[in-house]
Length: 287
Ligand code: NAP
Image 1: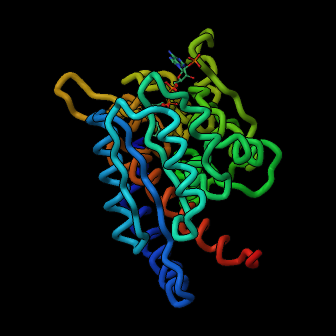
Image 2: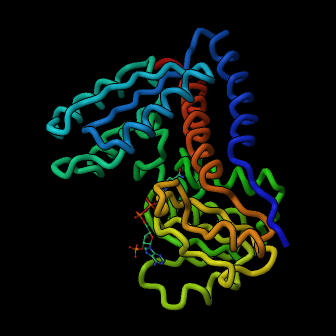
Image 3: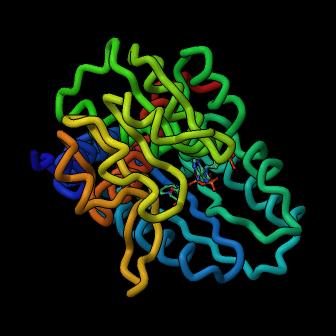
């Protein structure tokens, strides 16, 4: 068997076209969605992510405001900037690029963002909403993975999904979304004994660890859907995921590539959340 590819670039293109229409509808009502992006320090990977996000905003007509600060920025100063964006009616989404320098408490910073502008979906109010099944903002990466499953028309009900990784931004929310879609969910992590025992039973595997070639062909049930969230570098410096792509594609039914899979979908869902935030703000009666 050779797996069918789930192309995150092509799907993103389609979803972004639909977003452009929503942005024009908003602009007819004199609203342009606005996203504030805050970068602290000079982490090269973060600089690339932020640049890509700003460029993607331009493509769909979202106004982005990029603020870059030196790594020496104090937590108090960062909190002040967030307070200013919280109060700015032209800003509908606020994104603080992680990681932050060690002297800044990232969770405190996230909690300072108004939940209705937390388009990354990391605020406890949004995490809690996801937990209890109420509307909120879903974290962009798991949201993008769910869109990919929806795109291939995969029926999750009653299927066994194995999520590898339990971070607050990927693994845990991914598991919650799969559970909401009526899958039976197993979450694996660094203390899991015999990872392969679990993955071999999976109809869907989501790998979100950050270790290349963690998932190999012998760990995958024939026909399974394999979603690779990981972002690593191989020996030649090329971007790769957590899945041994060449081996696993011989066994799986569906597979996402790296690059060109979950990465572009993450940015697309950030744009989606920002447009959604602007639409919700427009629907809120003036106080
Ligand atoms: P993270 O916070 O470092 O979490 C990694 C998780 O993997 C942890 O839960 C850890 O378990 C688990 N783990 C570590 N070694 C393991 C092993 N041998 N077997 C099973 N589980 C193991 O990372 P993250 O932020 O969730 O990101 C995960 C990966 O996705 C990274 O490569 C990151 O770059 C990538 N990523 C990609 C996108 C995208 O848009 N494509 C977005 C976000 C993240 P413990 O909890 O026990 O430590």
